[in-house]
Image 1 (cartoon, rainbow, N blue to C red):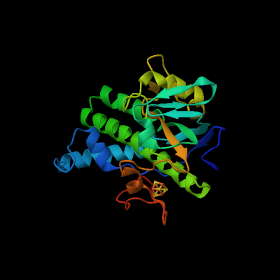
Image 2: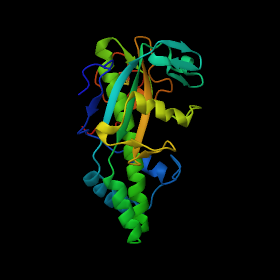
Image 3: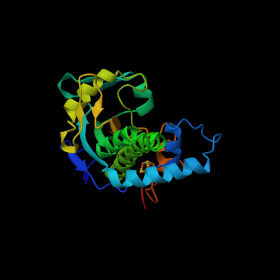
Length: 244
Ligand code: SF4
């Protein structure tokens, strides 16, 4: 368990009571939110894929915090000359005391099963199971993001929304620096030369931490967070990735 959001010693979070958001699965299936509705046949395939996914996945994450030594509108500087260039990060995240680095994964068994289903020419189930796995990895990243904010609040700190290398104008090659700060080995995640991770259903990300860090600059963070009676909540909860 994470005892402090500023812990610089890597901490492994496991046995996560993760709830997969069906809307996220449909998004990976190419459905447009609020427009497309799955047929009864698709729902049946989804139910089968979800059952398999719950049996196969092992959600876990490794986390550590790193002190911030400097900030500029598009830069965050960390000890030992490490710098991350992320456009507009100063405005989006506000002043920071530290950053949190997370490598999370649902493990590799699900993607092995997807391969077996393709070999057996069970294409609809294979594609759906792959989408369920991708959605599960996203939901896991959201879960850990929310968990970090929940740990931070009693410490008088706040945690921003997450960003990952390769998104929001952040160079994908910074994935290597991220892994140097927080290696994925404790949760079995490896980084390869082209900056992709195995198991494939893994996500690395960074969050900002500080007393005046900006939680939720686009309001999705609090909406899915399951913390009760949070004095800092900025929007009512409308869904959660926590299996309650
Ligand atoms: S409700 Fe919002 S501010 Fe409170 S812990 Fe959750 S994400 Fe953080």
